[in-house]
Length: 135
Image (cartoon, rainbow, N blue to C red; front, side, top):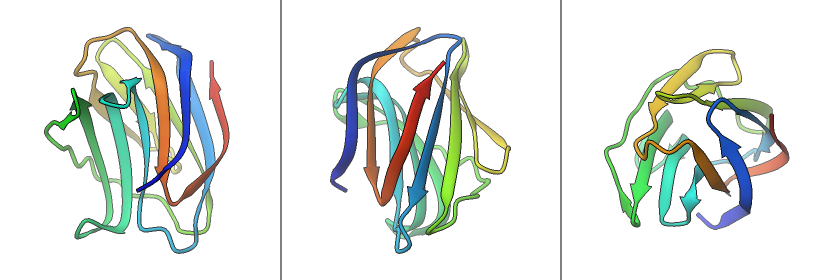
């Protein structure tokens, strides 16, 4: 999966939310939203998989420390559609990342780094990001 877009040195702090709006490609296999400190230390890897890595219609969450993937979590609730627009809201709380999916359901992923600030964001795969806002 080649990087689609990376943003560095933009602060995302405890208590803030980010809204990500994009369009999923019509033939999408998967895409990912990555939040962390740098390319090798990703606190949240959100990876909706339409048909990739032997999985269909699955959301996989994970983190990466020093370039090594940690234990995957599959929260369920797949609600992404090929060829359609989507909006995801991610809030950084004291316990972790609260992700509001396009259908309004929420998934939680622990803040395994216990950091109160992240400054690296990367969007990979079969998606076109239209807007990215931290508030």
